[in-house]
Image (cartoon, rainbow, N blue to C red; front, side, top):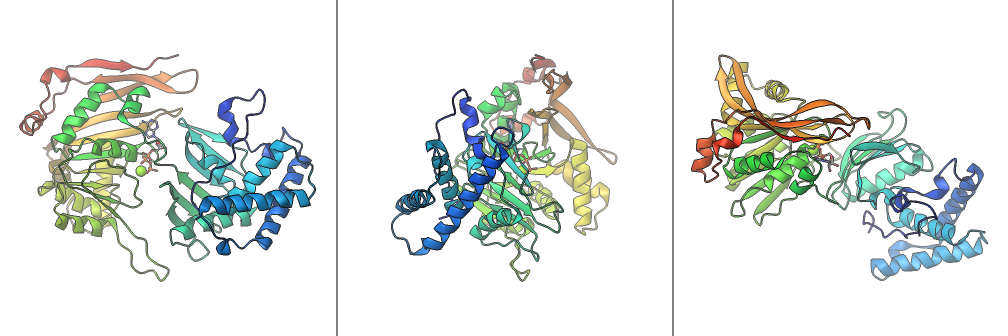
Length: 465
Ligand SMILES: Nc1ncnc2c1ncn2[C@@H]1O[C@H](COP(=O)(O)OP(=O)(O)OP(=O)(O)O)[C@@H](O)[C@H]1O
Ligand SMILES: [Mg+2]
């Protein structure tokens, strides 16, 4: 039952407060606005009532569907409030009930944040510091956990729901919320100042190509080009740093795969949301408590080659699977897509070399580069620029090798021109004038593009404001 989104009681917005503020405002916790003493009293009362509720109720024995159990618990909290003879006004009472319900059925203080679809990341640094990311910018919230034990209890709820555990023997853990959001928790002693939890919301409001255009994350020409590349079965690597938008881009590029193809997706934590009818989703498995049973991306990738895939989409290559991915791309599994964590296209090549060598394959660097240059047709770079805007900053053709060096040319790129008064990077998207050599292949695959499309020009300029 837990982990399920709860319908937090919606309070009417306080007079004079903007609508958007209402969900992130657990008012009694707003230190500085309400006297600290009142906040403490409210929290003490909440703890007391919650404790009594736990003593009185045995959730496991309650009958009825989720909604009716919730209703029964709501009534019980109401009764306890009366017994406590509290002097709460209507709003405070409703808030108290809703917070205790969140505590009982959901993820406590996190529920209020999880109910807000505009939040993309929730970052908890110990019980007293919770940040969110919204529209690309980090904000501190007033959300607090009572203490370390309270935060640990919530972490426990999250990880046990997916059959994992988080304790001294297993202080680093990946999990997922019921809505698909990705969770990583690190607890003391590894996290020095208290448990740290990073939640990447995914699935609430997936970003679409229309959003990319609306946010000026790329231009219609770039979308059209990428669409031709995917339907023309080119092999594409997406590169970018942490949180730059790689997975979002992979999801959107995958949406261009035709409906009649069999797609196998392989991920560490399933984030992709493909709409095609024929998709087999595979997910890795961490080792169990005895350290056994681990299934890696590499094993899934090797297995997927026997599954007659038309396309293989790998969430991220970060180890030995990289060489297998290149080999798959080189041996007829064209049209495959993956991402690599790297800060530039050049960096991506180096990362691939390092990953292949670290995995223990004794291949000379030149051979790795040859594999790379013959496997990968296009590299698309995602970047989170200063101040938060995320953009497709480079669409690059991998042309081949000259001596020991891989030759690449940008076809489209974003040229940053400065930082506006709001602190956000601005600039322009340009077509560089390079006409990719694979146009013939695209044409043969039925994804023809007029060569005039590539003439050098500025495609779109951000307003400086
Ligand atoms: N073009 C965009 N405009 C605005 N927000 C975006 C854009 N692309 C992605 N995002 C948001 O940025 C966040 C990070 O995106 P995503 O998960 O795709 O990044 P990532 O590079 O895969 O991150 P990680 O390295 O953690 O795997 C998400 O909340 C996503 O919704
Ligand atoms: Mg990702």
